[in-house]
Image (cartoon, rainbow, N blue to C red; front, side, top):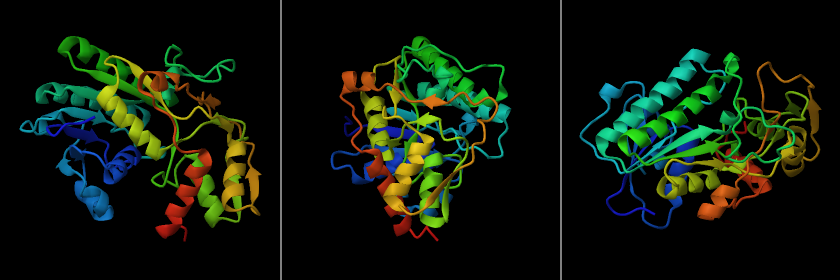
Length: 326
């Protein structure tokens, strides 16, 4: 997919997506292009993940500070994944919106400076808004929308605007822009202490007396392995059709309660599952959140290579091996 002159810039390279990509390149047996990662604090990542960090060159910078990005480097590809999707950070809704929209605008502008030939935006399945009950798998052709009058939808609304910016730069500057609408993922690099249910369940199965389900357990989700995620993103960066969006995720949906049971059965069969039965928070439209991935398969032959059970066991064994179960 790459040639010897290709040079990829990755934003968001220190987060979950970035780690998945670096691990992919670490085990990639064919030609690996030159990789540069933009980070506000490269040394922090280098110190914590030295074996991953050595796969890339590093630039200190911020996507919100366009004027400080280097103009003396030419990139062939940009994979823009710099968005903090973890709840509970110090950002409020306005700051989150600005980071996504203004950051994407800056990196698109930067792409025009450096002569980039391919640009991939990691967007979100949240751009579709609420998934109707009669649509079991959301296709790219579904044109729903999150309620713009609910502030909790800032992340999803900002991603819609970021997608539109890609369309504008494609038409105005001839930039080949591709959209990856990402759903839910799992793997060893998923945080255990955030709002990601599958990570919390694996943590509880290893560390806690019980496995706790926040909510009533009826919400339906699907999970793609981070190894598949990396492969799909790289394929779309290189081969995705310009001006088009692709769902990225698994089409195997199950309830959160079923997910907890699956984790329990694999890791800690004797542990009790406690469901809090707390109602969904205000503004949460994701009772069902499962994509159709037929387009990615039909255009590029992409499939999910890892089952949910394989993903869960990989998460558990990796965490235990790292000593993070104490």
